[in-house]
Amino acid sequence: MKFGTPFTPSTVKLMLLGSGELGREVAIEAMRLGIEVIACDRYEHAPAMQIAHRNYVFPMREGAEIRKVVEKEKPDFIVPEIEAIATETLVELEKEGWRVIPTARAVRLTMDRQGIRQLAAETLKLPTSPYRFAGSLEELQAGAKAVGFPCFIKPTMSSSGHGQSVARKPQDLARSWKFAMEDARGKTNKVIVEGKINFDYEITLLTVRHAAGISFCSPVGHIQIDGDYRESWQPHPMSKTALKKAQAIAKKVVDNLCGKNGRGIFGVELFIKGDKVWFSELSPRPHDTGMVTMVSQTMSEMELHVRAILDLPIPEIPCRTGASVPILAEIKTDNPTYTGVEQALKEKGTWVRLFGKPSSPGHRRMGVALAIGKDVKDARKKAAAAAKKVRVVNS
Image (tube, rainbow, N blue to C red; front, top):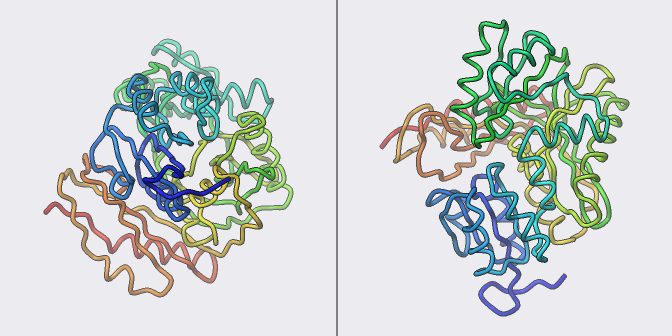
Protein backbone atom coordinates (compact mmCIF):
# COMPACT_ATOMS: atom_id res chain seq x y z
CA MET A 1 0.00 0.00 0.00
CA LYS A 2 1.41 3.36 -1.07
CA PHE A 3 0.13 6.56 0.47
CA GLY A 4 -0.16 9.61 -1.76
CA THR A 5 -1.13 13.25 -1.47
CA PRO A 6 -4.61 14.69 -2.14
CA PHE A 7 -5.07 16.54 -5.44
CA THR A 8 -1.95 14.97 -6.99
CA PRO A 9 -1.56 11.98 -9.32
CA SER A 10 -0.46 9.86 -6.32
CA THR A 11 -3.68 10.44 -4.38
CA VAL A 12 -5.64 7.58 -2.77
CA LYS A 13 -9.39 8.23 -2.80
CA LEU A 14 -12.08 7.07 -0.38
CA MET A 15 -15.73 7.77 -1.24
CA LEU A 16 -18.34 7.80 1.52
CA LEU A 17 -21.91 6.86 0.61
CA GLY A 18 -23.71 8.48 3.52
CA SER A 19 -21.95 11.24 5.42
CA GLY A 20 -23.34 11.31 8.96
CA GLU A 21 -21.53 11.54 12.27
CA LEU A 22 -19.82 8.17 11.96
CA GLY A 23 -18.78 8.95 8.39
CA ARG A 24 -17.34 12.24 9.62
CA GLU A 25 -15.04 10.39 12.04
CA VAL A 26 -14.07 7.91 9.30
CA ALA A 27 -13.19 10.87 7.08
CA ILE A 28 -11.03 12.42 9.81
CA GLU A 29 -9.12 9.18 10.33
CA ALA A 30 -8.61 8.71 6.58
CA MET A 31 -7.43 12.29 6.11
CA ARG A 32 -4.86 11.83 8.86
CA LEU A 33 -3.21 9.34 6.51
CA GLY A 34 -3.35 11.64 3.50
CA ILE A 35 -6.40 10.02 1.93
CA GLU A 36 -8.56 12.16 -0.36
CA VAL A 37 -12.17 11.94 0.86
CA ILE A 38 -15.30 12.37 -1.27
CA ALA A 39 -18.51 12.62 0.78
CA CYS A 40 -21.96 11.82 -0.65
CA ASP A 41 -25.38 12.10 0.98
CA ARG A 42 -29.00 12.92 0.24
CA TYR A 43 -28.82 16.39 1.84
CA GLU A 44 -26.40 19.32 1.80
CA HIS A 45 -23.91 20.04 4.58
CA ALA A 46 -24.06 16.56 6.12
CA PRO A 47 -21.42 16.16 8.88
CA ALA A 48 -18.73 14.45 6.77
CA MET A 49 -19.30 16.87 3.89
CA GLN A 50 -18.16 19.74 6.08
CA ILE A 51 -14.60 18.39 6.17
CA ALA A 52 -14.31 16.31 2.97
CA HIS A 53 -12.25 17.37 -0.04
CA ARG A 54 -15.36 17.25 -2.25
CA ASN A 55 -19.00 16.33 -1.84
CA TYR A 56 -22.05 15.34 -3.88
CA VAL A 57 -25.75 15.51 -3.01
CA PHE A 58 -28.11 12.89 -4.45
CA PRO A 59 -30.49 10.16 -3.18
CA MET A 60 -28.50 7.15 -2.02
CA ARG A 61 -31.11 4.80 -3.49
CA GLU A 62 -30.42 6.12 -7.00
CA GLY A 63 -27.99 3.61 -8.48
CA ALA A 64 -27.40 5.66 -11.63
CA GLU A 65 -26.26 8.61 -9.51
CA ILE A 66 -23.85 6.44 -7.53
CA ARG A 67 -22.38 5.07 -10.75
CA LYS A 68 -22.03 8.57 -12.23
CA VAL A 69 -20.01 9.82 -9.24
CA VAL A 70 -17.90 6.63 -9.05
CA GLU A 71 -16.98 6.86 -12.72
CA LYS A 72 -16.16 10.56 -12.35
CA GLU A 73 -14.10 10.32 -9.14
CA LYS A 74 -12.60 6.83 -9.64
CA PRO A 75 -12.27 6.11 -5.89
CA ASP A 76 -9.94 3.41 -4.60
CA PHE A 77 -12.49 2.54 -1.91
CA ILE A 78 -16.30 2.88 -1.88
CA VAL A 79 -17.42 2.99 1.77
CA PRO A 80 -21.19 2.78 2.49
CA GLU A 81 -22.16 4.44 5.78
CA ILE A 82 -25.95 3.98 5.72
CA GLU A 83 -28.44 1.15 5.18
CA ALA A 84 -30.80 2.65 2.57
CA ILE A 85 -28.58 2.49 -0.50
CA ALA A 86 -28.67 1.08 -4.05
CA THR A 87 -26.98 -2.22 -3.24
CA GLU A 88 -27.63 -3.71 -6.68
CA THR A 89 -25.39 -1.01 -8.16
CA LEU A 90 -22.69 -1.75 -5.59
CA VAL A 91 -22.78 -5.42 -6.57
CA GLU A 92 -22.39 -4.45 -10.24
CA LEU A 93 -19.55 -2.04 -9.50
CA GLU A 94 -17.69 -4.65 -7.47
CA LYS A 95 -17.97 -7.14 -10.34
CA GLU A 96 -16.42 -4.49 -12.58
CA GLY A 97 -13.41 -4.21 -10.28
CA TRP A 98 -14.32 -1.36 -7.92
CA ARG A 99 -13.54 -1.98 -4.23
CA VAL A 100 -16.65 -1.90 -2.01
CA ILE A 101 -16.14 -1.97 1.78
CA PRO A 102 -16.40 -4.48 3.34
CA THR A 103 -17.94 -6.29 0.33
CA ALA A 104 -20.98 -5.56 -1.84
CA ARG A 105 -22.56 -8.81 -0.63
CA ALA A 106 -22.17 -7.79 3.01
CA VAL A 107 -23.78 -4.42 2.35
CA ARG A 108 -26.63 -6.00 0.38
CA LEU A 109 -27.45 -8.69 2.94
CA THR A 110 -27.25 -6.43 5.99
CA MET A 111 -29.28 -3.62 4.43
CA ASP A 112 -32.31 -5.90 4.67
CA ARG A 113 -33.09 -7.59 8.01
CA GLN A 114 -34.54 -10.51 6.09
CA GLY A 115 -31.23 -11.19 4.35
CA ILE A 116 -29.01 -11.09 7.43
CA ARG A 117 -31.46 -13.00 9.66
CA GLN A 118 -31.85 -15.81 7.14
CA LEU A 119 -28.07 -16.00 6.71
CA ALA A 120 -27.50 -16.16 10.47
CA ALA A 121 -30.33 -18.47 11.48
CA GLU A 122 -30.94 -20.64 8.43
CA THR A 123 -27.55 -20.84 6.68
CA LEU A 124 -25.09 -20.52 9.58
CA LYS A 125 -27.45 -22.08 12.17
CA LEU A 126 -26.71 -19.41 14.77
CA PRO A 127 -29.05 -19.04 17.76
CA THR A 128 -31.53 -16.16 17.30
CA SER A 129 -34.87 -15.09 18.68
CA PRO A 130 -37.94 -16.76 17.09
CA TYR A 131 -39.05 -14.74 14.05
CA ARG A 132 -41.30 -14.50 11.03
CA PHE A 133 -41.43 -12.14 8.05
CA ALA A 134 -44.64 -10.45 6.99
CA GLY A 135 -45.68 -8.53 3.87
CA SER A 136 -49.20 -7.69 5.02
CA LEU A 137 -51.18 -7.16 8.21
CA GLU A 138 -52.66 -10.65 7.83
CA GLU A 139 -49.17 -12.19 7.61
CA LEU A 140 -48.08 -10.10 10.60
CA GLN A 141 -51.01 -11.42 12.64
CA ALA A 142 -50.07 -15.00 11.75
CA GLY A 143 -46.40 -14.36 12.50
CA ALA A 144 -47.14 -12.76 15.87
CA LYS A 145 -49.30 -15.72 16.82
CA ALA A 146 -46.39 -18.04 15.95
CA VAL A 147 -43.72 -16.19 17.97
CA GLY A 148 -45.99 -15.13 20.82
CA PHE A 149 -46.64 -11.89 22.72
CA PRO A 150 -45.09 -9.52 23.47
CA CYS A 151 -43.34 -9.32 20.12
CA PHE A 152 -41.23 -6.76 18.33
CA ILE A 153 -42.12 -5.45 14.88
CA LYS A 154 -39.38 -3.87 12.77
CA PRO A 155 -39.28 -2.82 9.11
CA THR A 156 -36.85 -5.06 7.24
CA MET A 157 -35.05 -1.89 6.14
CA SER A 158 -34.57 0.71 8.85
CA SER A 159 -32.13 2.05 11.44
CA SER A 160 -32.02 3.99 14.72
CA GLY A 161 -35.41 2.63 15.73
CA HIS A 162 -37.36 4.06 12.80
CA GLY A 163 -40.64 2.17 12.41
CA GLN A 164 -40.01 -0.20 15.33
CA SER A 165 -42.62 -0.97 17.96
CA VAL A 166 -43.73 -3.53 20.53
CA ALA A 167 -47.05 -5.38 20.27
CA ARG A 168 -48.21 -6.67 23.63
CA LYS A 169 -51.52 -8.06 22.40
CA PRO A 170 -53.18 -8.83 19.03
CA GLN A 171 -55.04 -5.51 19.07
CA ASP A 172 -51.67 -3.67 18.82
CA LEU A 173 -50.69 -5.22 15.48
CA ALA A 174 -52.62 -2.90 13.14
CA ARG A 175 -50.96 0.13 14.77
CA SER A 176 -47.53 -1.53 14.55
CA TRP A 177 -48.00 -2.41 10.87
CA LYS A 178 -49.07 1.16 10.00
CA PHE A 179 -46.14 2.65 11.93
CA ALA A 180 -43.63 0.31 10.27
CA MET A 181 -44.87 1.16 6.78
CA GLU A 182 -44.88 4.92 7.41
CA ASP A 183 -41.62 5.31 9.32
CA ALA A 184 -39.28 2.81 7.64
CA ARG A 185 -36.13 4.15 5.98
CA GLY A 186 -36.59 1.95 2.93
CA LYS A 187 -39.61 0.65 1.07
CA THR A 188 -39.43 -3.14 1.19
CA ASN A 189 -43.06 -3.23 2.46
CA LYS A 190 -42.03 -6.04 4.78
CA VAL A 191 -41.45 -6.41 8.51
CA ILE A 192 -39.78 -8.91 10.78
CA VAL A 193 -41.74 -9.91 13.86
CA GLU A 194 -39.53 -11.25 16.65
CA GLY A 195 -40.45 -13.13 19.78
CA LYS A 196 -39.14 -11.96 23.12
CA ILE A 197 -35.96 -13.42 24.62
CA ASN A 198 -35.54 -13.14 28.38
CA PHE A 199 -31.95 -11.90 28.20
CA ASP A 200 -29.89 -10.30 30.96
CA TYR A 201 -28.29 -7.67 28.74
CA GLU A 202 -27.31 -6.92 25.15
CA ILE A 203 -23.94 -5.96 23.74
CA THR A 204 -22.29 -4.74 20.58
CA LEU A 205 -19.20 -6.78 19.78
CA LEU A 206 -17.11 -4.63 17.44
CA THR A 207 -15.40 -7.13 15.14
CA VAL A 208 -12.62 -6.07 12.77
CA ARG A 209 -11.73 -8.03 9.65
CA HIS A 210 -8.24 -6.98 8.54
CA ALA A 211 -5.24 -8.29 6.59
CA ALA A 212 -4.03 -10.50 9.45
CA GLY A 213 -7.43 -11.96 10.35
CA ILE A 214 -10.08 -10.94 12.88
CA SER A 215 -9.76 -8.82 16.03
CA PHE A 216 -12.37 -8.05 18.67
CA CYS A 217 -12.87 -4.94 20.77
CA SER A 218 -13.96 -5.30 24.39
CA PRO A 219 -17.75 -5.77 24.55
CA VAL A 220 -19.84 -2.60 24.48
CA GLY A 221 -22.91 -2.61 26.72
CA HIS A 222 -25.80 -0.41 25.67
CA ILE A 223 -29.36 0.65 26.29
CA GLN A 224 -31.80 1.12 23.43
CA ILE A 225 -35.24 2.71 23.61
CA ASP A 226 -37.57 1.95 20.69
CA GLY A 227 -34.55 0.59 18.81
CA ASP A 228 -32.55 3.83 19.20
CA TYR A 229 -29.31 3.90 21.18
CA ARG A 230 -29.48 6.07 24.30
CA GLU A 231 -26.37 5.01 26.23
CA SER A 232 -23.32 2.79 25.78
CA TRP A 233 -20.32 1.80 27.87
CA GLN A 234 -17.16 -0.28 27.55
CA PRO A 235 -16.05 -2.77 28.67
CA HIS A 236 -19.25 -4.55 29.64
CA PRO A 237 -18.54 -7.32 32.17
CA MET A 238 -19.47 -10.83 31.05
CA SER A 239 -18.37 -14.39 31.73
CA LYS A 240 -15.43 -15.86 29.80
CA THR A 241 -17.73 -18.56 28.44
CA ALA A 242 -20.27 -16.05 27.13
CA LEU A 243 -17.54 -13.88 25.63
CA LYS A 244 -16.01 -16.84 23.78
CA LYS A 245 -19.44 -17.81 22.42
CA ALA A 246 -20.09 -14.21 21.34
CA GLN A 247 -16.73 -14.03 19.56
CA ALA A 248 -17.34 -17.36 17.84
CA ILE A 249 -20.76 -16.21 16.57
CA ALA A 250 -19.35 -12.87 15.38
CA LYS A 251 -16.43 -14.54 13.62
CA LYS A 252 -18.69 -17.02 11.86
CA VAL A 253 -20.99 -14.40 10.37
CA VAL A 254 -18.22 -11.88 9.56
CA ASP A 255 -16.11 -14.56 7.85
CA ASN A 256 -19.11 -15.51 5.71
CA LEU A 257 -19.86 -11.92 4.74
CA CYS A 258 -16.24 -11.01 3.98
CA GLY A 259 -15.11 -14.04 2.02
CA LYS A 260 -11.39 -13.85 1.25
CA ASN A 261 -10.91 -10.12 0.66
CA GLY A 262 -13.50 -8.24 2.74
CA ARG A 263 -12.14 -5.59 5.12
CA GLY A 264 -13.63 -3.35 7.78
CA ILE A 265 -15.35 -3.18 11.14
CA PHE A 266 -18.69 -4.80 11.96
CA GLY A 267 -21.05 -3.96 14.82
CA VAL A 268 -22.41 -7.36 15.88
CA GLU A 269 -25.36 -7.09 18.29
CA LEU A 270 -25.96 -9.99 20.66
CA PHE A 271 -28.31 -10.92 23.51
CA ILE A 272 -26.77 -12.54 26.59
CA LYS A 273 -28.32 -14.53 29.44
CA GLY A 274 -25.79 -16.14 31.74
CA ASP A 275 -23.56 -18.14 29.40
CA LYS A 276 -26.17 -18.25 26.60
CA VAL A 277 -25.71 -16.00 23.55
CA TRP A 278 -28.11 -15.14 20.71
CA PHE A 279 -27.32 -13.29 17.49
CA SER A 280 -29.51 -10.20 16.98
CA GLU A 281 -28.30 -7.90 14.19
CA LEU A 282 -25.18 -6.75 12.38
CA SER A 283 -23.93 -3.55 10.71
CA PRO A 284 -21.00 -3.73 8.24
CA ARG A 285 -19.62 -0.38 9.38
CA PRO A 286 -18.89 1.56 12.59
CA HIS A 287 -21.79 1.28 15.02
CA ASP A 288 -23.51 4.13 16.86
CA THR A 289 -23.06 2.40 20.23
CA GLY A 290 -19.34 2.23 19.41
CA MET A 291 -18.94 6.01 19.64
CA VAL A 292 -17.77 5.30 23.19
CA THR A 293 -14.52 4.01 21.66
CA MET A 294 -13.52 7.60 20.90
CA VAL A 295 -12.48 7.81 24.57
CA SER A 296 -12.35 4.20 25.79
CA GLN A 297 -9.89 2.79 23.23
CA THR A 298 -6.49 3.88 21.95
CA MET A 299 -7.91 3.29 18.46
CA SER A 300 -11.55 4.26 17.96
CA GLU A 301 -13.86 2.07 15.89
CA MET A 302 -13.48 4.58 13.06
CA GLU A 303 -9.68 4.38 13.12
CA LEU A 304 -9.91 0.58 13.16
CA HIS A 305 -12.24 0.72 10.15
CA VAL A 306 -9.77 2.85 8.19
CA ARG A 307 -6.78 0.71 9.20
CA ALA A 308 -8.60 -2.42 8.07
CA ILE A 309 -9.61 -0.82 4.74
CA LEU A 310 -6.00 0.20 4.06
CA ASP A 311 -4.54 -3.18 5.13
CA LEU A 312 -2.62 -1.53 7.96
CA PRO A 313 -1.58 -3.46 11.08
CA ILE A 314 -4.04 -3.73 13.95
CA PRO A 315 -2.14 -4.79 17.07
CA GLU A 316 -3.76 -5.32 20.46
CA ILE A 317 -6.71 -2.98 21.15
CA PRO A 318 -6.34 -1.69 24.75
CA CYS A 319 -9.49 -0.46 26.49
CA ARG A 320 -10.18 1.75 29.49
CA THR A 321 -13.57 2.30 31.11
CA GLY A 322 -15.73 4.77 29.21
CA ALA A 323 -19.33 5.68 28.44
CA SER A 324 -21.34 7.64 25.88
CA VAL A 325 -24.76 9.31 25.91
CA PRO A 326 -26.21 10.96 22.79
CA ILE A 327 -27.27 14.61 22.81
CA LEU A 328 -30.78 14.72 21.36
CA ALA A 329 -32.74 17.56 19.79
CA GLU A 330 -36.40 17.33 20.67
CA ILE A 331 -37.28 20.44 18.65
CA LYS A 332 -37.77 21.09 14.96
CA THR A 333 -35.18 23.55 13.71
CA ASP A 334 -33.15 24.56 10.67
CA ASN A 335 -30.80 26.62 12.81
CA PRO A 336 -29.68 24.51 15.79
CA THR A 337 -27.65 26.20 18.53
CA TYR A 338 -26.09 24.52 21.55
CA THR A 339 -25.95 25.82 25.11
CA GLY A 340 -24.35 24.32 28.21
CA VAL A 341 -21.23 22.92 26.55
CA GLU A 342 -18.96 24.73 29.00
CA GLN A 343 -20.87 23.27 31.97
CA ALA A 344 -20.68 19.78 30.46
CA LEU A 345 -16.90 19.99 30.15
CA LYS A 346 -16.19 21.11 33.71
CA GLU A 347 -16.10 17.54 35.02
CA LYS A 348 -12.70 15.89 34.68
CA GLY A 349 -12.61 13.15 32.04
CA THR A 350 -15.57 14.34 29.95
CA TRP A 351 -15.82 15.30 26.27
CA VAL A 352 -18.54 16.64 23.98
CA ARG A 353 -18.72 16.00 20.23
CA LEU A 354 -21.21 18.09 18.23
CA PHE A 355 -21.96 16.56 14.84
CA GLY A 356 -22.77 19.77 12.94
CA LYS A 357 -26.06 18.49 11.54
CA PRO A 358 -27.79 21.40 9.80
CA SER A 359 -31.32 20.67 11.01
CA SER A 360 -33.56 18.57 13.25
CA PRO A 361 -36.99 17.27 12.20
CA GLY A 362 -38.08 17.08 15.85
CA HIS A 363 -36.10 14.15 17.25
CA ARG A 364 -32.51 13.74 16.13
CA ARG A 365 -29.12 12.77 17.52
CA MET A 366 -27.05 15.96 17.28
CA GLY A 367 -24.01 15.14 19.38
CA VAL A 368 -22.60 12.84 22.02
CA ALA A 369 -21.24 13.24 25.53
CA LEU A 370 -18.31 10.98 26.41
CA ALA A 371 -16.65 10.18 29.72
CA ILE A 372 -14.07 7.95 31.34
CA GLY A 373 -14.36 6.82 34.95
CA LYS A 374 -12.94 4.62 37.65
CA ASP A 375 -15.59 2.00 36.81
CA VAL A 376 -18.56 1.59 34.48
CA LYS A 377 -21.03 3.14 36.95
CA ASP A 378 -18.85 6.21 37.36
CA ALA A 379 -18.30 6.68 33.61
CA ARG A 380 -22.01 6.27 32.84
CA LYS A 381 -22.97 8.78 35.53
CA LYS A 382 -20.50 11.38 34.19
CA ALA A 383 -21.55 10.91 30.55
CA ALA A 384 -25.25 11.20 31.44
CA ALA A 385 -24.66 14.35 33.49
CA ALA A 386 -22.67 15.95 30.66
CA ALA A 387 -25.29 15.12 28.03
CA LYS A 388 -28.05 16.55 30.22
CA LYS A 389 -26.26 19.91 30.43
CA VAL A 390 -26.11 20.40 26.66
CA ARG A 391 -29.32 21.73 25.17
CA VAL A 392 -30.27 22.14 21.53
CA VAL A 393 -32.23 25.36 20.96
CA ASN A 394 -33.63 27.14 17.91
CA SER A 395 -31.81 30.39 17.11
